[in-house]
Image (cartoon, rainbow, N blue to C red; front, top):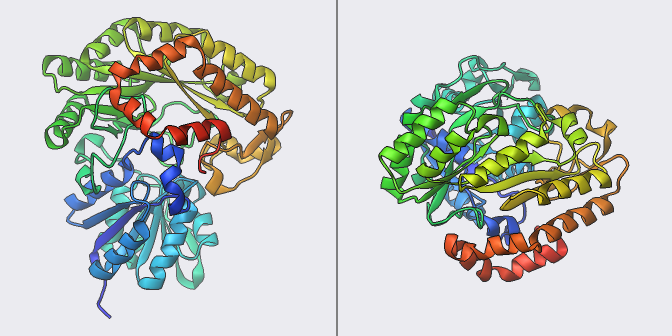
Length: 481
């Protein structure tokens, strides 16, 4: 048998469900975004001389055959999976299949779900050889370079030692300086950028893509996982951001970019410098970002608009002030409303991010959320079904707050796996559908989407081509059919 190549690693982003369901998965139809974590790790490993290949199962649901063929022809010594809660078990399925093909290959799992559960991952899943806790680049590179026999000396790893003992080597103290990292290896994604699609009605022109310019968050809300970056908060400099966008434009002809940072405008000076660069040396790229109300002002918004900011998303979560105060730091719905008006005044689209089903949710609180959202000039909404993820503060005592069905494959924010005390699942589903239907049948909303004919014509094309699937989702409230 040919020896495995210790300098090669296959990086996999699992799909999370049956491949045959992918064609009608409303989530994939609405948008397919590149796995930024994996391509960032790939770029870091390549710079260290480690050969990487990426299989993104979300973009390529027929990936089982691709993985098998790659293993047989390249004999990598490692396969690594980046996992959310909902696709973790699919990663385990693939790892089990991989072990049947190449028994000596080492399987490595990372991501938020794994970082939160740590030793439990290896206790319950024998097909996992190593789990990486926290930031993945340095730890995975060290593991490949030193070999699996030296894993015990590397911080950030859960491993099996002699006699089956499972140990965690502890957190890394050396956080990466984000400006020293290479740009993500977008080119390793087959078909990039055409194989990836921005969320529908969230962009003016194609091709588009996404990036993350910071890591961590300075806040501590009840529903957010902090297991990967702990309490750290770091961000790229303005010049790094500009050069990143310039690279995307020159190499891939990218025309729109979504920043998926939780706190894009936290450092006002950084954003002011970055947007001024885009004004002084235009790249022909528009962008979206996510902000908190505390970190924007009208002067900055006008500059962002001039630089190409097309849409800003804000986490509203709930329009009930008492419920919001239970789960979020610095809750201030009045301030949030004021800033939404300022964003619109600056000529930027606004998207509201909300949840239904937080602990303490009632029919009355859902009505307050609807009244609040409908009173504001919000152009688009994303209404998620609250899910208590491992690693979030509220996860620790979630069973005391309601009924929780911890079915990982269903924990994708599109299913009510948690039912708060005082309300039923049926009522949550009814109000969820009512919220969406009421919003999308309002004259202001209908006119807004009509305007997308000239503001985002590609979105309308995609909508019409997939109209049947969108209508079935609207009727059934089910992700698949």
